[in-house]
Structures are given as C-alpha cells and as structure tokens.
Image (cartoon, rainbow, N blue to C red):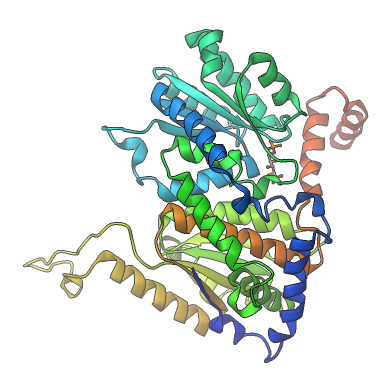
Length: 445
Ligand code: PA5
C-alpha cells in the first residue's frame, strides 16, 4: 500500500504539514501508551498480531459447518456489527454472486441493519424455501434493529426445522457476560463467540464480528489477518512519520481541515469497494464527529457518480478534499474488441484492457479536480484480495485513532448515537422510559 499526498499538501501553506509531525507522532504514541481519551477501547491497536491460529481455526470450523449445512446464511447486525463484514464480503465476492446458478457457497444475506418491514418480508420470502442459518452479532445484545430481525428469523427457523435443529444453525457473537443476546444464547446453547470488551464496534472487523461472516462467505480470513498484521507493523510508533502511511494520512487530513476543508470524499474507481467506503464513513464519522468538530466523511463511486456528483465536486463550494482508493491490478482481464464498422466510434480503444480506460478516467478526474481546487490524496493498493483489504482496513483504523487524537476528541466513544434511541423508545412506550414518553408526547401534541 502506498499513500501519495503531494496534490493535497500543495493546498496548505508551506511548513504547515511538517509543523504537525510532532503532534502526529504524539497521537500515535497515545494509541500505544494508552494515556489518551477512550483508552479502555484500544484493544484493536494490537489486535491483528494477537490473533492466534487456534482462534482462526475455531472461526473457520464454525463457518464451515454453516457452509456445509445451509443454502443461505443471514448475518444479523448493524453499524460496527455489520459494516466491516459487509465491506469485505462485497469487495471479495463475485459481483453477481447471488445470481449465479452454480453455487459453491451459501447465499450470504444481511438483516438487522434497518427496520424496513418490506425488507424483512422480502428476506423471509427469500429464505422460505431454503435451509438457512443465522449469525447474530450484537455487542450490547440489545440493539433494536438486530434483536427485532433475530426474533423474526429465529421464530421462522424454529418453525421450519424445530428448536433442536435451529440451535445448531444459530451462532451468536456478543459480550462475554452482559446483554440479552448473551442470556438468550446461553439458555438456548448456541455456539457463541466473544467480542472483546476493549474493542468498539467500528474497530471490530478483525474480531469474530467480522471474521465469522467473512469466513461464511468463503473468503480467506488468514490472508486478511496477515494483511492487517503487516500494516500494524508499518504503522507502529517506532516507524518514522514519513514512512508511516496512517500517520501521513492523519496529518494531511488534519492540515486540510485546519485550512477549511471540512468534507472528505472517499473515492473508488472499482464498484467492489462501495461498502469499504460505507465502513470508512462509520469509522471516521463516529470517531471524529463530536464536540461540534470533525471532517464530514462522504463517499462516491466513480466513474458512476461523475455523472451525478461530478459537477458539484468540480465547481461547488470549495470546502472538500478527495481521497482516492486506487487499485493497481484488477483481478480479471477484459480486452475491448475491434469492430469493423466502428459505428460507436470506439475503435480507438480496441485492443486495450477496460482497466486502461478506467485508469485514464481516474487520472483525468484527479487532474481536473485538483485544477478545480480539490486537494487529492491517493491510497494505492495492489489488488482487491484478502491480504490487501486486511492491510487497508487496519491502515484506516490506525489513521482514525491518530487523526481523532490530533483533532482533540475522544475517537472511541459515540454518545451522540443515543439521542434517537431515547426518543424512539419513549415513542414506543418501552418499559423504563415512562418519563421520556410523557415528555415527548407533550412535545409533539
Ligand atoms: O460502533 C458502534 O459502536 C455502533 O455502530 C455499534 O456497533 C452498533 O450500534 C451496533 O451495536 P451492537 O453491536 O451493540 O448491537
């Protein structure tokens, strides 16, 4: 992985980036020393290097059992208990996986990440003629979206195959001791995995939260972890700032923020990376958006969104910068054919790979946006495979920890996400919310 920042550093006054070097190292040091805010949630920092073979074997065995007994596996979870697995699985899967007739893997479908009645009805209809299993993921064990989906799916599964058989097809990933899901799983005797206390949801993709769902989808979790382990080494405190890609990224985005660039757009030119951006949005949004501070994380898929958001990015308000995830080598090869009649006028591209066209679109876009006043950071990965995605995930996590400390916030809490829950529970008359119910009903009368 390589980071290039020269088309971003040129947008901040000379010396302002180097002035941040000490602050960047100090912030990285806080992740190591555990002396910063939110230090009870630093379990992710050395997570990759602490993953044992026996743990990976256990995850793989559980996944293999579901793979061999189920035509479909539902991954239930939301936020940090969903986006990491979804991001990795979407990046690595065949784009049309769920439409392929010859299947070697079970269908992997998701639930518990919304409260859409039609979504759940469609999902249950899809599952009705299939043998299916459920991986239910919730650290707190009480998240409404996930618990609601699980209640529906568990009931359906038990009615379909009986309680005894259903128990064998349900895996719970939750806290070691606390929460409704822990009590339920213990009572029912489900296979369980523990989410470490000191790893928050958005940093949990390399715990069972992400790994079990990634293994169920048939991807190589060992290579994923290896990529993250190598990136852990490359971003540690002993590495000089200029050689540490996470430190570089954290420093440049904070420098840009200081000079008015308050929105970061994560760009990909490969649709498989769409959900990596969704995961990244949660990682940075939930970590930095507090105390009325923080860069707003947005994302686009190019070239698709050049035909929708391109105008805004080229000529709209100049408070944005872009970070492009560029993929050096596609996994597959498609060559553009020549056409005798050339009615579409595309013979100038004949013989080229599609990726050559994509790369020129990327270069042309980057240059145009820089000309239009949009600073540009490039994060280059070799290819979209388990190893490189594992490295990319850890690169962003480490950068996020450093960047949050540089911004002066606690990057590891998320007090703001409670506000909607409190109102929703009050409006639904949840026991324990009587006073809030009274207050909110008076407010909306
Ligand atoms: O990052 C976070 O903490 C959140 O996105 C949570 O992961 C999300 O709300 C789901 O929580 P839980 O795993 O407790 O169901």
